[in-house]
Image (tube, rainbow, N blue to C red; front, side, top):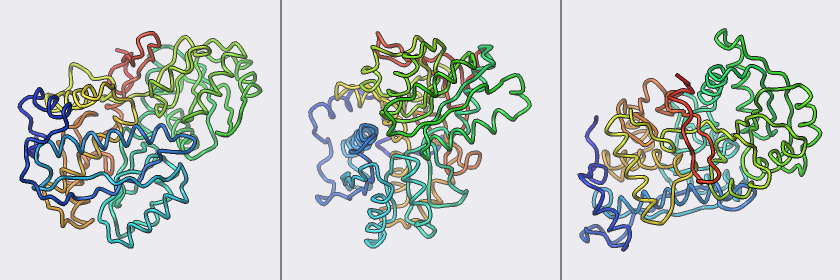
Length: 396
């Protein structure tokens, strides 16, 4: 493993827990003026709860950094700019930051927002997008968090093969996230290894729809063995309510942006018997993970426990990209240019995070791939996500 900054080389986490609990830094010599971290997230709007969890994660990472002296002797301060779940506002905010010569941006949260920003950053700043649904061009100034939708689609197909679920239905939202996943799932289904799988029904809905009963009735008539519901936020509740109402009793594979305990807790009256997600290692750790990954995962759970919380997927998606960008600043300095930050991140081939060991040569602009995807089942009584597969959706 590479040389890591002091705040990442923790011999034990008991002291960290105590520090976070009382909010006191053991280092007082850091510069009084903190470095501001421009953070573009959606904390209001239709899926604002997802952005709030991302913000919480970024703030916890900043707390860890500050508790151990900051980065290069400077404390860091998260400065939020809310997109209100609007790509147009995300563009306005980024243009303002570009005018202020900002070199790097934390966020945004959603596929549509990140896609809207991509044309603006041909010469920087670096954008650390927290959505796995974007696929930045290799060498660009945008990096994407988590396992990509292509990797998730591959893991889902592998899991379906292992379970013997050959007849598949899919209903996806017409937004950028839904379209992206559907495109990648079609590519995966066309592979020879998946020739035994059959897509028997395909339907769509908008995130503003109040009912999808007609679409689900058509899916039910196709007699699928499993159903993919790909959307984020309130759309999942609408879709699951429709599944319940039409009496479609099959395992449901849902978009993983919905791996949020508070959200899923509201579906008790109509949740399916089996609700699955293409999760990530940070949500469902494996005993076989390398020591550096386990240490990162322990830091995550300890930090959240200090706040009386457990990490949901939005927090787990933003955790590694936030650490990674701060590590780049620690290595280069606060005067680093966008080019230097991009180059440092791209040079990392064994960076340990909560979601695996990142290799940006193997997975440009992302660092991790399908092997970091774990199929997880929502255990409603325990309010926990339980791993039901190995890496990449393997059931063996």
